[in-house]
Amino acid sequence: MLYIQKWKLALIALVVGAGLLFAAPNLVGRETADRMPTWLQPLSLGLDLQGGSHLLLELNTQELMRDKLDGVLDVARVTLRTEKLRYTGLAVKDGAVVATILGDAAEHAQARRALRTAVPNAEVTVGADGAIRVAYGEAAWKQILDGALSTTLEIVRKRIDELGTREPSIQRQGDNRIVVQLPGVSDPKRAREVIGKTARMTFHLLDTDTSVEDAMRGRVPPGSMLLEGMNAGPNGQKQLYVVRKKVEVAGEHLVDAQPTFDQSAPVVSFRFDALGGRIFGKVTQDNVGRNLAIVLDNKVVSAPNIRGPILQGNGVITGGFTVQEANDLALVLRSGALPTSITFLEERSVGPSLGADSIRAGTVACLVGLALVIAFMVVAYGLFGVFANVALLFNMVLLIGGLSAIGATLTLPGIAGIVLTMGMAVDANVLIFERMREETRNGRSPLSSIESGFDRAFATIFDANITTLAAAALLYQFGSGPVRGFAVTLSLGILTSMFSAVLLTRLMVVLWARRGRRAELPI
Image (cartoon, rainbow, N blue to C red; front, side, top):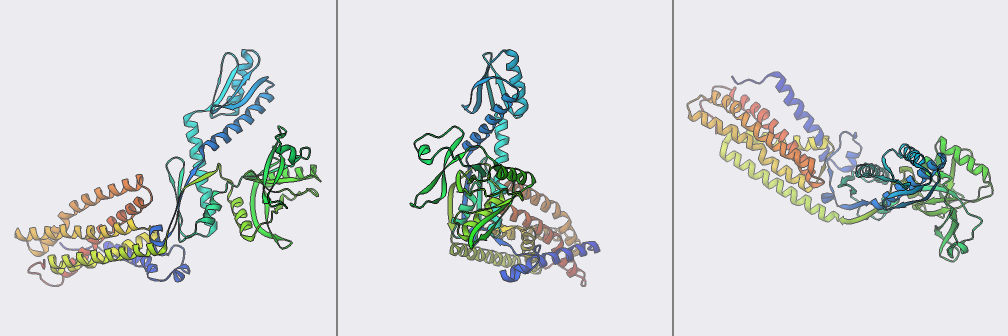
């Protein structure tokens, strides 16, 4: 018996209403949409439609390995001294920290136990001659690299968000690469500069016992290093500094950095956490009158004189900045330091005119496809074809509303998914209507044919859509970028097309059938 339960009517009304609500912002301008709630926003256009910049980043894995081993070297030195073990030849060699432990077998075993505790993820081996080797295995290196890539991804995301870029796409690619797409950003220079800064800030005391001239001749003490300044000196060349290697305060204690002005000059004010504030206060208290070098990515930003103890845990970085440079420096310091440097492997820009051409071509494809589908359904199935076309239009509204609701970004492959969905949406109606025709030829009444058409075609429709949905899920799982955009559009289109074909079309056919006695079907 042709009948639709009340709960199904309520579900249809609810879904259609939600689709209209979420699709409506796509009909208004961007200024109007910006005044709407954050959960009610239009579709965002991808890089290929809006234009913008595409960047491919790669982590410097060799530098990351070297930094990790340098850290293990420091830990090994402190550990062996704490255990009062004699050693010689402590160094980084062939991807490991090596040394020779002097003494008997008991001291060799003691060194091995101590280093295993100090560096738990590393493999520690000791030879019969006391040669000790501390190295990370393949699994440990993979874990370190995964952690570094995840950290870099989050820091890059923070930096781009603070640049004010709308709807950026930041995705992991492979084991050590990140793809960044910035829609609407035609000049990626500033984004590249902000993203690429490692922003590893440390505070060191200047070595007042060694002159720059001696250091340039190669006479640099073991505990010092010669660093270049960020700013040019009076002669137009970069100023040089002899800096103690010992890190007095690490940048990891930094919790905030803001651009400000000091005597009308742009500067960056910074603030440490509680522990960093105590360390910074003790350093400034013990070294009044000395110069404290602020080092950012192995370059001295400034080396101010400590005029008195700074016990509040905050300070100011001066360096002859422009307003833009002060803003960018504060931004990268706030977002945190990258675990290692990154290399830009690829950089390209997509002009807005090319994006507009893509939108125009996609719109034409959708309209032509829609017109052909509508014409075919009317010619092939008459009034029921009109019902299917009405359901198709609602299906398009639900698809656009669904994409807007989940915050999807529309790309050119996404438009291809929409065009494909239009054909798939009426495919279910074709199965239903053909089943009705078959039942009518077998002598069934119109009402019985309608009932049988919907009931018996459902299993076929369900199986066909489930297999397509599984394929779309695999595309999303193993694809990236445009492929995922196509998979999202296709998946949502399958769900909306099943809803429109099984419920919306059935509702219209049932309403038609119940308006008087029907001698034959109009198909």
